[in-house]
Image (tube, rainbow, N blue to C red; front, side):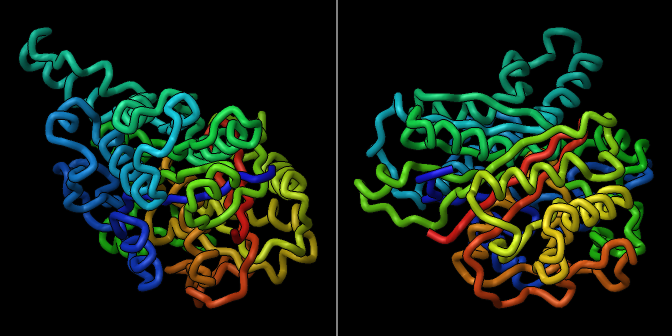
Length: 409
């Protein structure tokens, strides 16, 4: 991949709204986990989550707009507004040459739950006329396009927990191919509802540490028992290097490589040998024109589930060989929780900030490493380091894998 640069970052996360607030949360080793506050979870087997406290979509979303957007879309538009402002784009872009690829793993589930209750309580006339556009998984991308006047490519990937990374990778391809000058790309999720918590709990995917939520997300630890459900959004502004240079933009990082693969194995469990994940990492390095020795840091998918962390470790070893032993790796899901469709986009933003600050975030709650997870997972982080190239892994239900490689500008 050539000449695709990052000029803006916007995030909404459980440990901070805005890229600086999120970074401060990561550096202070703060966990975003706590008792569920948005509804009464007393009857559920899992009563903890990583919610975004006191989220206010203003100033990037007006009250009128908010009433017509599901929470996941509100978060996406807010993050897009931050990224757009940081990039300093204003009106200096041709509408037909700018677009938005912003996905969601689940879409407007909160709207579905709320409107189904309204139907049962009040009948058909109780259902909002805005229900359909609010629940659409492409609602965030559409809202961003309308808000910023972007008339180029606009759609929403839906690949479970790989969604955010797929969105960024596919948007970068549009820029690389000369089909767009500017693309907003990322993911958003706000599905913490009784229905979703019950469903993920029934699968056995969630941590049940209800009495100690701050230590519930513990990637690569021998005592891990599942992920902590999170919500949030992450948006990057991608531009061609020439377009950014013509308008004097500050370049934050460069997109060097991207690959997408599929395990073709199981609806929810990763391939036991991690072959799809390995191919994604190798393919992204090949696309970037680099080798394992050139990668200075890896932001792992690291969900804190027994299967994922062990298999991802094996896949990293297969992709990096002897270099895996000295590669600094961290899982920021230990602090943010698992943001599902937003995870890969937020973590790509974390990688850009790591390059900017020359600091690698750590993995909190890693006190007793699983013997099968024996790499340098930065339990002592954050760690200052000289880093020029970073990689970010995102793996989703359905066996969908995406890997991004980013470099210093």
